[in-house]
Length: 256
Image (cartoon, rainbow, N blue to C red; front, side, top):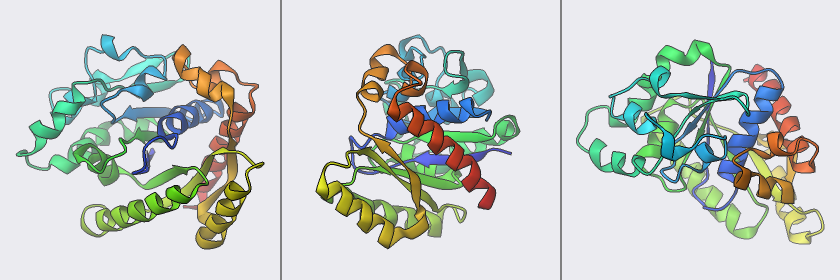
């Protein structure tokens, strides 16, 4: 039975998509069966998984509108080793089309039910805003992984996200919890980043993952080749950190 995790942060540009595709590739590398769902209309996680969003016959949009099943819409990313339920610009219209529909925030949860036994992990890349799309992700997830930079504004964004998760937990999904905070784009030479990192650890304790993802040029280059860094350059420091993170995730879900 798959464990479902949203990669979410209401602050933009913190590396949500980079975290999603590299964690998916890292988990595949350590022998896990993974489905990656792209809930962002920009489709960056789709493109970053070696799947051309412009060529998708069916996407997560069709799944949310119940005109296709996940089994029909998913694409196997041979290069990356995991399955992709992709997104493209059409998804932006789903917000408007779902407004008057019943069970609109549970569409993804219902669609996932028939395929959960086929995977060990389902990873959902959420858009930065708290939209109907993000809500669909949060309603079906067992937990949230929060990638964040060790900067002052990131702490403010985290407060907003924690409040959102509390509301969803109270009203829509009793299983939802923050699984952990992942420190990304980390540069140990910057004193402020070290200070914020220590603040996180003192405040959130073991909710902060042990793995730290360093700032890494190869991770930043990888999307232009349509691949996660873990596949594009497995020897890079950032790629190795994501494989370590994947192993930490496998260990952590055994204790959940």
